[in-house]
Image (tube, rainbow, N blue to C red; front, side):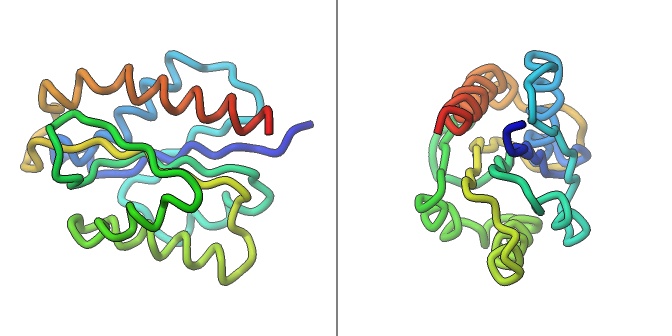
Length: 157
């Protein structure tokens, strides 16, 4: 049996586009419900209780909103060594610091998966509300395809 890939959606669904990671996770569950050795995990606003999920995983894909300083709804995928580029943007969101903490904790404890990625969506609005902005909502299928392709690539490697 192949090693497991964790798809971790994070964000606060009460803050409009900040919840895109959770919305994207739900979209992936509907579009790709039967991917073998893939676990979809709702990480909410993320904390260290999630680290046990990393143990034994061969891959971790984090889904999140980010301030990428690009057009709302645009997507960037940061993989393995490119995560350093994403980490430089982490100070722009309340829960992003814990993404860095989670990855660092994984390295310190030796449970960091071989493959790591962040699929980041540029938010338009982070305020009180349950709705995604139109550009972020339209980004869901594109982001889901990027996640699916990354999973397929990792499974072949």
